[in-house]
Length: 533
Image 1 (cartoon, rainbow, N blue to C red):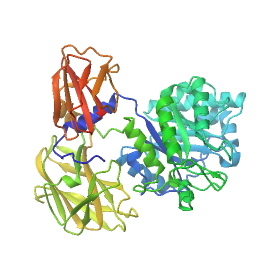
Image 2 (cartoon, one colour):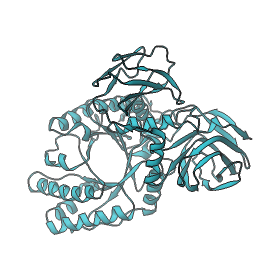
Image 3 (cartoon, rainbow, N blue to C red):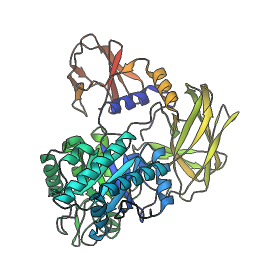
Image 4 (tube, rainbow, N blue to C red):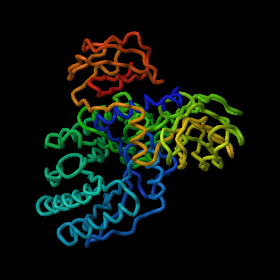
């Protein structure tokens, strides 16, 4: 998380959200099996989607029992608190037994039964969609039945504002008819398990993307799958590194895997030829803070390529180290996403205060705390104006380390106004990186955005800035600048450059290295773009 953003600076947060709304979001999708992984250690801030695996169909379109439903419930709660979507994945390898799919998909009544059961499951667990992992339909009638199933399921999911995706074989997937491309939101290409020797090298990833794109799969629906495990031992990446494997290599004692270098290269490939990466599976990685984390390597590329996730609309982000006053705490460097600093050495009764935090509307707000704790047992509360207004508290779990980060949250009700916002340790033993405050209701979010922005924000699809990152000259293309004004803001929301848009070139050589937001204003409308110097 980027440091040095005072809580009272709202403009930059809004601009970041506007930047991302005009760009198709690059997806980072992690599978979480029911039998592996801990929902408390997931690096949610580096993901856009999580697929919970698996639930199996019956021959008549029913569903077998869901494994570990409590885990799914906890996953949905934590993921949604971090603006990450959760989908249910149906099928999987299942020892090559796809008889349930084959039988129910061949019968219109059973297909409808399956679709209705999926609707009920999605509603029951507040899921964001369905991922079909039928491995694999056969050519001929089976392929046609697959298309019929996906078409019917697509209609019902999309009518409810839900997603439909599918996992498909890396290459030679002729039984997935091209009609499927039109009904899914995206396809996850399983560009791994080619064989023990190759398994999932860069060449196979390139081959997989060439195959599906060559068949007509749109770039925005093409998601490249990467493995967090090795073959033929089937050990996880973390197990291999702990056993002595080089985290930057791809083979260790005859076991083939993907190290950091290859994972970064594949993520760049996915940016160039697709719109996302998919991971099988999350528990194979190291936790946050470990320098060998593959998900962190993916996230580094995402940040470099400008595909960061937008914060929730209207959010106020407060960096913990930017307190105006405190008692008992200390600042240290953090290895959480974005680097910078966090506040540590928090004991019971320690506190931090952040002055002049404005809540534009009366209503419900979600307060999120980015925390780490070796042993757990902590508890954090928040208040207004030196404790005269108590807002509530939430427990802090063990994350397994002082730099293993997770996010906890609770909802509070606040009257519109400007306050000094306080964070108080009811029980100690935890670190704090940031606090994020977000209006909960749609109406409140819209009013916050209107209050902060004033004018409408346009998509400006043809408005492009390059190069990005930039050293000296920033170029603008695709928009008539005549009559407009360009303002550039730094990471603190401070305006650092301003002027009439007289040229399609801007000299930014005087700017210090960092993240900036360009705002082009014309005729009461605004277009925003983010760039790195």
